[in-house]
Length: 289
Image: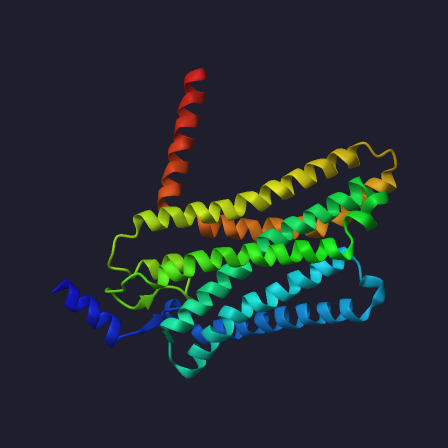
């Protein structure tokens, strides 16, 4: 009986239903308009930035090369999910086929992972610029920049190549309704009728690792940067160094803050363990007092 159900679900129904943001909103039309406007602003802003950097010879340096790649990733990142969501709302459909779902999942994982490592490469670039300014042209030549960017794309794609095929090969015997506006791995895994606990644990460990490696690089780079700034005698030099790093640090905080919420704190097991650890810590403090 179970085999019959499994075959029926795999041969008779291959589409998923994306429930999205609008099904839970009392005013979907204004929300759709706001998202569309924000999408256009992000798309046009990043496109203009890439064109300006490409056309202005004064901006042809490692920092702006990395910014160009970051803008391209952002454009692709929002284009993978937002247009599909808006078109579904306008046309009144919410279906996505299994191949489309897998492609969306792969691109999303690849772009997110690539951006993690690109931000780490940008932190290293700032470290070299501030801590080794005389050797900067040699240490950050065009070949090194290409290598860092290529490595970021490759390492990001590793996450997509590992998680997407495994997720999409699980049997989906339950409801085909994905409670998200795109095919995110945890949301799709909830539809599987098999035991996915081991895979989910490995998936979250993989995501944590994808966070920890770039965070370690970024933290180390900025530790050396702060140490170098602290040793500067010139107030103007300190101000210039902080200005150089401030925009990158803001992007890092926003991006990693969202990632930590998505991949770590939203996991019930991790949240439960974190609360338990905090409770133990408070009890120890009270006993010391």
